[in-house]
Amino acid sequence: MNSKPIGVFDSGIGGLTVVHALTQRLPHENIVYFGDTARVPYGPKSPQVVREYAAQDVDFLISKDVKMVVIACNTVSAVALDVVQKHAKMPVIGVIVPGAMAAVKATTKKRVGIIGTRATVNSNAYTNAVRQLDGEVQVFAQECPLFVPLAEEGWVDHKVTDAVATEYLFPFKQEKIDTLILGCTHYPILRRAISAALDRAVALIDSGEATGVEVERVLDEKGLRNPSKQRPNLQFYVSDIPAKFAEIGERFLGQRMGRVQKAEGF
Amino acid sequence: MNSKPIGVFDSGIGGLTVVHALTQRLPHENIVYFGDTARVPYGPKSPQVVREYAAQDVDFLISKDVKMVVIACNTVSAVALDVVQKHAKMPVIGVIVPGAMAAVKATTKKRVGIIGTRATVNSNAYTNAVRQLDGEVQVFAQECPLFVPLAEEGWVDHKVTDAVATEYLFPFKQEKIDTLILGCTHYPILRRAISAALDRAVALIDSGEATGVEVERVLDEKGLRNPSKQRPNLQFYVSDIPAKFAEIGERFLGQRMGRVQKAEGF
Image 1 (cartoon, chains in turn cyan, yellow):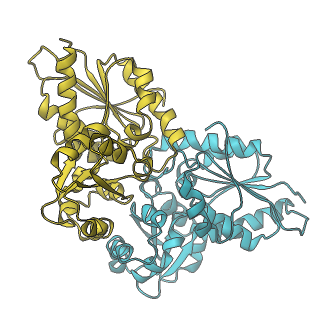
Image 2 (cartoon, chains in turn cyan, purple):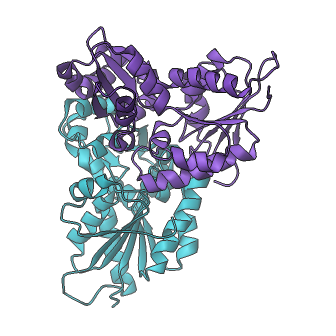
Image 3 (spheres, rainbow over the protein chains, first blue to last red):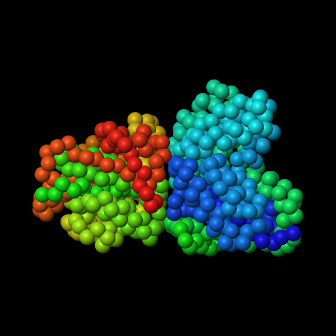
């Protein structure tokens, strides 16, 4: 039993969809969230730079005395999981392996698609994780750089977003996938448009939800659950506070956020 | 006469359109370019963070012994011109005032539109500059956050870009502007789509081109022109080198770039 908070970090605002998944599954856990809004997005950056920033991000969470670290950012999970593990000296969970596990479980025809940022797709992290779990699964990947700005613009039900989704996802129709991993925390916001651009039977895997399952398993395995049944304390820190963080954040989190604090040192 | 290079900086790749304008107008000037590709984009960041980054960017150019500084980034020109001037102790030219001057000269009905990032539009820098030059001009501003990712995705002739332009620029039809300032260095890449979404007679002002005119004037005024008639030396530095910088850069620059170097200290 341990009442310390779970630390969650992301390159920006998208990781709030992972916080949402955690609060649904683990409603009594305290959470400290850090979003590196000064340096978002990580997706187009080089692995070297992402690794450097990830080390700084996890150091911030450690300074907040967290009991475990969740890397909500797919890009960081893909290229810097080892860096975070080395810094943290406590349980660390990225979103890649839980997402891959859920996809392998869901696919019946063993044909899985993955969408993500350029960095995530180029890293082949999901492809490797899926194929390590089941070498018979065929994996098809597609980078979708416009999905993040569309989600941040709030064009969720919009013909432009539908047209972009149709263009990006068209290859998956030909490849006849039956499961698609949403390999970026922004993408669950666009679930409707993504689904509409695919064959009807394709299962969508939200890596954030899958990560919630894994976090619960690790908390139980290590005896780290919060014994309190009180309403938990959710704290939000960002490296920069543009006006739109508050405006957009609640759409991602699915609830009111309260005060957002500026993290020092960024 | 002075053969030292002109220093140009931007948040990323977009400033290469300004370098293009400079090489057209001043074909014998040496240029050192710095793009802060590790921390791009500046548009959604707070003024405080943009000012901090701008100071670091100009310090890098000073370390390269430049004779003048051109702020190719509209966001920096809008919110941090004073910071750069304070650091540089040499002539500094931002893109806002030259763009505003060109617009005031072009408008016949005294109705000017401005498009830019959220930070540029929220700063009111163009509006203030235009109205300081001519208090009778009415100014209408519109932020266009999706234009930068569309330009970087290379969707220049694409129905999605046309649809986005139509949606963003529709208010300008009602406001009957006759001149539009392209208040972001990425936007000249999308000139065709932007023009198609406006009434035919609307004049487009490329702030980069207008800045070239002003740079030439200042070089002459201060006696800083390069006496050499040789082919100039163009040097490109970035704070991060994602693969796509080289891929996209030449489209913005309009010529081959040669080697791109990693700037230390970012």
